[in-house]
Length: 570
Image (cartoon, rainbow, N blue to C red):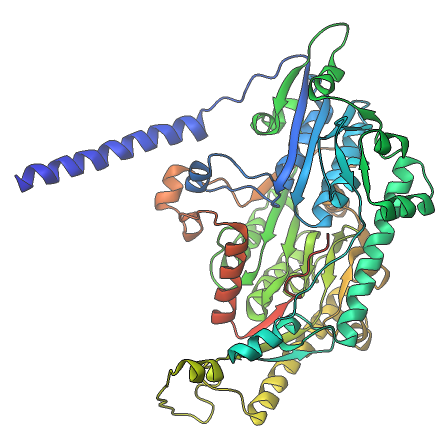
């Protein structure tokens, strides 16, 4: 009886593997792209979480049911649609986006580039009470259309930073953090009850610069003065006719009226979704031909080991850069960085591979929302650094420390017995606090790391070391500010970085290139038998995922080069 049961179980496992194999083959290998009619429009729904690069793992895609909305897919689809004679125009359905400003700027640039083809782009908004980033993106379109009863809110830019020190004091938890220097505020939310002078100065400068860019861009796009836009922002909310009269939108239309905008001579235009059009091979519309340029994505907190979903493992990124360096057919490398930093050692391991690669071929960094601290560390050796005006970068500084739970455990009646060997044994233990001598020892260590950071920035950016220190000290800069102090070379997005790589590689401006992208798509068999990066990487809820990453980072790496936690501007 038992033998028959085992045979049945083995049969079911074997049957599942066959079905999964066939599904994988059909879905990934011979799946045909959808037919695009000769008269179609591309509809992109921009709402919800927006990641830098889509899920590439077979299992992740299968479980989520679809690729998450990604900047890469949107950017590539707009490039394809520009030269695709079958695509008559684009409709952007805009809703609240969960991302920072530079990603919106990247898509905005791609929309403006698409419009050079002479085709139209329409933005449609149904209801958006707080719509700052999204409205900024919409102003790149030919027409902004609002639902007749739609509610549009442009309220300006700001940020709320919570401070938990008083709550931690009540719990009996003490954050013991040493940092270099006054602008290195990554853990101020745990060590302070409010802004320090340096923290406030930095945040006001960042938000002020972001807001100035926001107002200037909207004013130019809507053909108004900056004073008029500032007055409208102070008014904040606009519904239907009020938004139209204020000149913030161009039309008030219902959904069926919007889709009819693409009709021509009574001929109905067929809708093609982003998911469908993403399956179209770029070579079929004349793209991705010619010499090769590697496009490597470095996303998320930096840590040692292999990358996980939306995190950057030094072993994985170093291997990708090394592969691009050793591949003689690749003319240049573009490194797309979207990271708040992380482990100093892991960052330095990636920096080493960047240094080796730049000796053999052009290496260009394209910065997304964040490329600060460790994110800047891995970027600073590039031949060229390109950033959006709203990118948060710099944060040249280091910190280390721990959370001391001694008082909390005492309140809970939890006791510990200690067995130590060396004098410093248990220095990072959460069961005891740091002595003043240990604090000084820790500060000495991170000052040494900071000095290494300064030296490498000075070498990579050709800036005197003492000048790097003046703009360092942990301070975060916007992309536009960073350009003024020579931390970045140009303002622009991914397309700008690719053009820079072409120039450095001696590729003609009008010549197309073939992008070799890392991470690569992982098939069913790759998921089972490939490298560790092909493990089952199921996306978690966004906030839980972030919290777990930071917890792992703090547990595994002792010296960190990270940007302020919770730095998010709305």
